[in-house]
Length: 326
Ligand code: PEP
Ligand code: MG
Image (cartoon, rainbow, N blue to C red; front, top):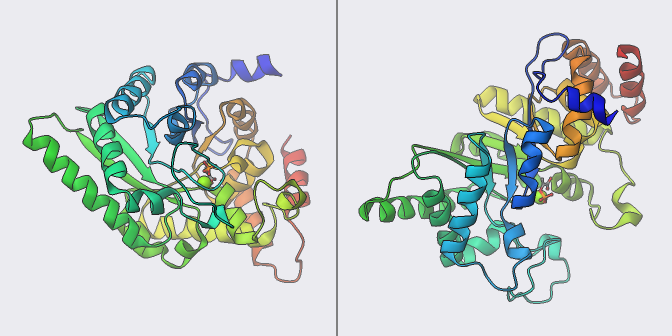
């Protein structure tokens, strides 16, 4: 099977009915980069910048961050990289970062909340990203956004850094793409406002599922209790796809569910056309989609999600569909 997936590396990810699917990979360290070439991923759809902080015994300085991002961009060899600003806190522990004991760290002082409370830290990171992408395109996104105002605050800090750098004669990125991760449920009721603010939205299905279903993603006792292919979660994802279409906003998903053939199939059926997944998922997901009639699946899935009489998971239906398609 490994051999079979490797043979697909250079095959264009087109469904049987001609839908082009973008398959990118998730990464966080330089050791991940060779996987781009090996897997045939089209780029890095999620670069978790907190990894550099997590493996370091002290806070990486601005120039260290810049050098690191520069290496990432260089090794990506022209393929796009979407950098996510620091997502510290919750399940991502950084030892030297002063943090009080929290009773509910997943709901605590983390990610963009922490970054906005430590604007010096965020500005250092934004500056490092801007400098590393000098003359090229910079794609960056913000984790754990709860309200649109947080994005505006990041954007303002970004503008300050842009002005600062241009004042000192630095070459800025030639294009800036600004995005938000959609992983906190409150954004579901601000979808149009959110999409007005950003160039793209990336669904963090790991956290979105955790918060929607109120199950700790790190607690094995409950994490598999509910199905990502149950109707509630699929309807949530369908609403996001519809909002993105309505607002003509680029949409991708970078959680674990994109990396397994059956759940990836459901996502394509819902209308997702871009996924960022673990590199080991690229081959299996591509093998699945090459044989997929996305439109036929879409019709079936849509009808199943509209059916209020049958409350069960659509997992069995999807498995049957997958078997029929071969
Ligand atoms: C997610 O929450 O789905 C996600 C991609 O981010 P992380 O797993 O790093 O929290
Ligand atoms: Mg997350």
